[in-house]
Image 1: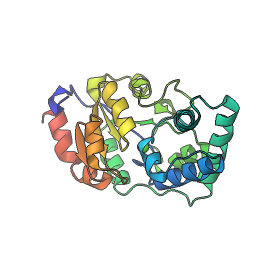
Image 2 (image 1 turned 60 degrees about the horizontal axis):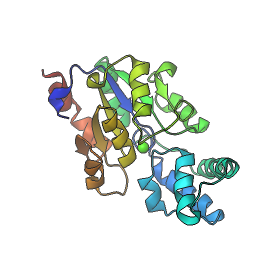
Image 3 (image 1 turned 60 degrees about the vertical axis):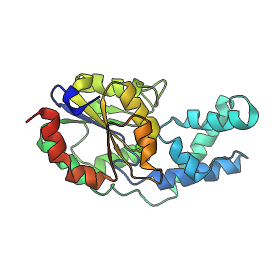
Image 4 (image 1 turned 90 degrees about the vertical axis):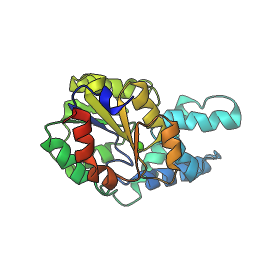
Length: 233
Ligand code: CA
């Protein structure tokens, strides 16, 4: 997909962790700690590769690798609850540098900000209202509670389009994780990758990203140029 495939930009679909908040190192640490507690092996580095999946999907990928079968629903629930508790021990995640400034530009352009996250952590969703006030309409949010499949399935982003009432060629996706990029691309949406974590940027391009920036600040600094290109003005 090229920039010229955009019809007229109306909405920006934002992933949350690693895009709006600098929260991924805490998630990776919490995953690693809790999985080890249960005898399951997931390094912090690998946690970044699974970023964006639902908690259940991540747990079962690791469990199947070791035991050749899915974990019981009870164990999945237990591990995910412990992971959420472990995450909460970390300091409150800060806004990703450049994200606030970019959001002001998106709002000033009259575009609809839509949240599309695999997270189901009430604490971070609450934080959204504090860190990005008057930004995300409740009706324009897709979380872990809404989806059946989750990323990399296109489902969450297709739901985001539906909630905003826009077509795929009237939106862009902003993602930092390979699995999230896959989901955006599979939904037929122009997908901007911002490499805010430790992975090689090539991983995001291999996942199908249409555009790659090394940070949210770099995306923000290049917003005007991209916006003009997207709207052919
Ligand atoms: Ca993310």
